[in-house]
Image (cartoon, rainbow over all chains, first blue to last red; front, side):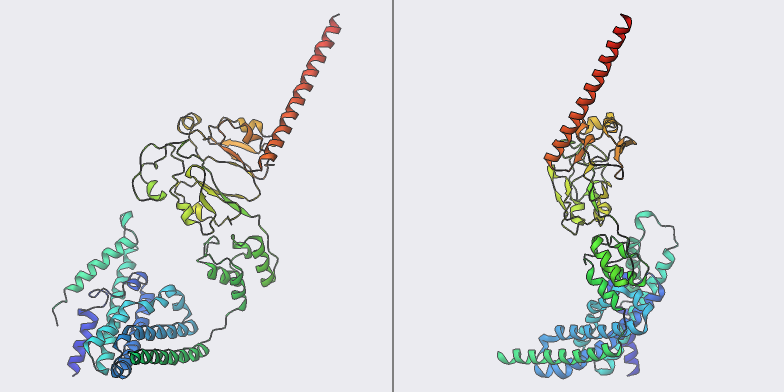
Length: 192
Length: 304
């Protein structure tokens, strides 16, 4: 049981990393990965939303949608849940985490449309996980997202100091870095 | 078929209701006191998020004004009215600045300046400017693909005479978006009540300009001599008007052999002032002539 859960966590976090393997949630991955601190904050926020959203969607799916044969409402209701949770986090951060709130700027409300979260909830539904696996899967996905952001921000902080050819500065080198990172993560493929 | 529809509405309605209640409680619990003046200031602004104030947008500007880190008259589009109202909210006197508008300092349409190559690339000035010095013969000339028209959020720029973008005085608020958009740096902010403008940006020597463009400033200095108040000078091969000295008499525009100085006054006014000048010149000439005649007569009398 524990072993299965660990494999589920590891799979979501590393092998099938949401950003670098499934290519979901690229927007904050490139947008908030300039500083390690804000990357860590963003990772935490996304992990939190992922876990709660996955839990809530699991409950809604299993107790509301499926018994009533309303599977076509899946995406609509999931988006509603995610949007509500993001609103909640935004209010909380505005009150208690002013600095982080400022650092996130537009990327915080954009979690609403972060495909990593909707993707995770939909994959979770397709996989038919039970309640505990659902939470573990979301935590794994969040951890993987945070991991990708932290690695990227670490590299980008060093790239700031590097002497780059002018045309590569900024976005181009960030995209090249992301590509190489994704290839590196591709190396985990087939481990599970 | 009715049943799933009803069920769907009921389920989504219920979910939305529950979440709504949750959020409304949360907004009470996490309520943050904000300065009511921020909202008041925000409401006064144009809301175009043009960035003329140098901040990220109207929200950022209103916060900065209330925090005191930006001057209350920083909103260029809002102009004097908004600055005064913001001053009322903030309870402080506001220094009123003179309204400004942008002017495109080139009128070299294809018919008068011509192309030295045919540009077939991305339809925007910034891309066209990268190829050599742009498709126009004159390296300072307006490319006229409309980057500025696109950048203008106030409908103040249209393609005017010969396809050259033209600023509509009534709509322009002087936000400076076109200045940033133009790869040739043709736009400049000028006082809104100034009516005489040099519409050329070429710093090429007069001989070169003469060959390239029919309406380019050739730095002949005729305008300098025509100006009664010493307000126009040729600097670096280009005539420049000192708007503080200029009295809008239009003498330079009238005398300019290349017609690159524009007089925006109504036609009858231009004619009247031109007539007045001509009369004055004729009188002076007559007076001089009379004096010379008198002197000659005196000399003659002395000889005799």
